[in-house]
Length: 482
Image (cartoon, rainbow, N blue to C red; front, top):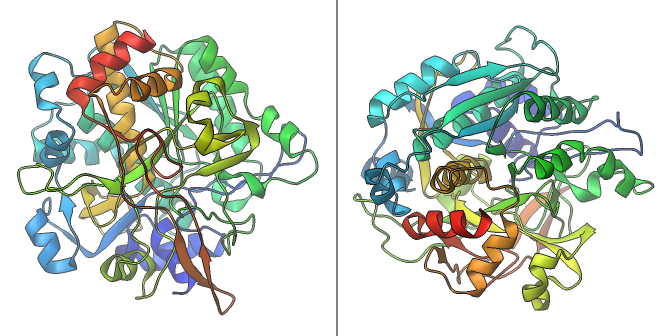
């Protein structure tokens, strides 16, 4: 493939539907697959590069949601509607019992936001017969966001990310309130950016009651300056510590380049295994990716596997713009910053002395993408398909909101409960035992394969403890984390 082509496809928020607009983002160094890349010095104001993670597919937008059959006929890829995803995770029974996220709040953090998000969510809700959120607030606590510019590829990319985050958190927890937290700095340009995210989240934790913070971005650990890297990370953990104190669950996407991730410049992948921070932070839940295999009713036709579209030709064409292996898989591996936390002692044979990523996984495959509606300028308006751990993270944010309602309070750090549930073989945890996150890609005229990790029962560095059956998982998590 050409890495630059893949960059233009992903960060343009609408994939091949918005190639021209996305080209602007590509020149700013945005990459596909790697959820983000960050560089930091030892000061709190360190320069960082953070990129949106959403991948959107399709050559032209459609007038309505696309069915699985239509996607398979047109793209030779599967795609799923909201009812199929809800059925796949066994959610209707919870909804029937009144567990919808009522009384909880999901905070979604994105640069810039989207100028059409209220309208787009309303269209999305109408198509899938969803109620509007009880409250949908948009705040800019780290500074006023500049007027939207459809020629700014960074703004277009983040608008796509925002749309995905809001629509799918709401799809899973329709009774939860949404707090969209927009930051004013374009993190795709490598300027003083990530500190604004930290400041915004600190403000939210001080002034709002939220139950879960959903972050569909992260940063390659090796993108930090070698000297003082750990102190640089520590300087950016303020919001994470505050969330722990306030018993707020923090989620972060594990990344979309499998075992590889983007370098600081954003123009190449590392050629050896890496992981991303914040999902590698012991106080954050890292969300990885799986592939669902569903029929039209949303029933699984086979068990979920680790998301890896690297070697699927149809996915290569839509995600990377050419047929040929390209890094397109769920992130995971061993942290170089953090040692094994106590809650991973039971899987020390897998993680060694390092913090292992991810903790849990949800739907993320592009061969199994989900329908999304967007109308922001800079990309064709209409329905398309989206995928990546940017999908998995808001999906799981919705699940956490359901569990917080069930418990009657926010849950805080849920990782110890996840590993306890896995060890006890609780029915809410579904092991993912097939697939891997090994990726192959071409850069600098050479082909590279970064060997990742295979799925296995109990825990793996490709899928974490596995995925979920929400009907059992929600009450189990509420009991253990409550």
